[in-house]
Length: 346
Image 1 (cartoon, rainbow, N blue to C red):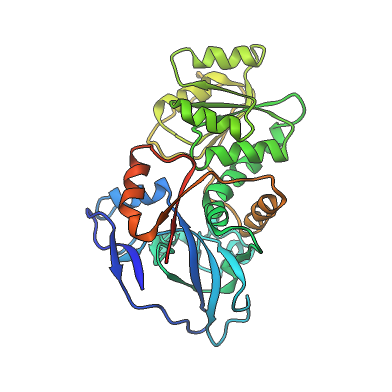
Image 2: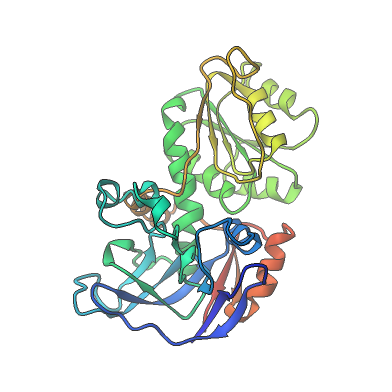
């Protein structure tokens, strides 16, 4: 079968011919229908040897949807033919958090040598992917694969981030989404679907603000020197109740600190390399709270799929054949993807 693999550190991914995996034990073999591309994939590709615990070669792809093709002899579910999305942050499988479907916060994550499917373990940018247990699969029914696959990270991570700040987003509240790409445009929709909050969007690209408006944002503004003043004006001068930063560079963190009202919540999702100095007293608003959400839980993924099937979530997706993975990665690096790039095998 064909697979997009990271063959060594310092090399671009290559489309390779590899053996189709055979399920053993509790394994489940999934025929891939769609696999999303993520900036996390770019971070992995660009990593220096030793920066991550992974050992190449392995197949990329942690946003995966498809149907069950075969079961190992000890796998009990799901049934062959069932359409599923993969819950990606595979943990140790035996700690209390993994047992509760919270593999994203596995107690033994530092000892594993991987972070999940496509992140140190063979992933879904291939015709088939081997899943170690049926518990990592969530049914999607008739949801299109190019919609379902990005929901397993872009949707799940956004949902998890929103869930962490939702207590601050009651009536007459305001939330700001910084960075309206693959995750940000879904965060806007999740905020609109699950909170009464007014949603403001920030990006450096006009086309991203247009995407934010299509996704339900009440207003958007470009990232400029006066953006904090503009956003504060839109809140009557008090500031926003929560910021979801999907960029995470120095400029966006500074903006978040400038626009948060006292008691405000900052969910830092993006890995843009920015730093924030926390001191007391200092420049941060009183009562400020910071969260660093990582992916999400398996029950939350089921909630995200349910939202999508209800019509509350729609992924803006650009489709590419598996053979066009290099072009898709190039477009992603240059910020030329609207929403999410999705690879379609076969």
